[in-house]
Length: 81
Image (tube, rainbow, N blue to C red; front, side, top):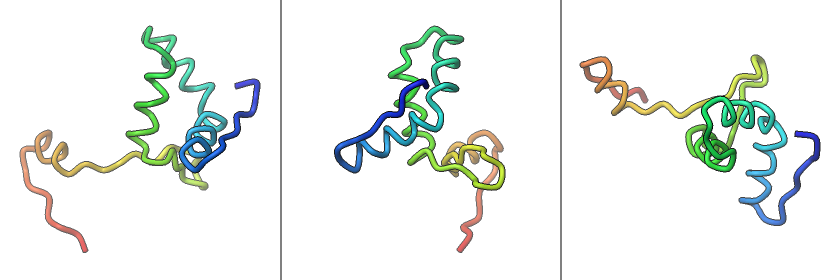
């Protein structure tokens, strides 16, 4: 994005931070798949939690969802504590 976005409260700041970091990529993906950029940004925010990223790689951290892993792998996932 060409303009830095700011927020007035914690939620707005989280969304602004996500947009400031990934807005360009989100916009490109939304255009490629012909979906509203607001929808793409919303899905990105939900699926990545807070839009956190690994400082070493710059890659977005996505949520691990054991129920999807089980369904796709056909197996069980042991609890890790």
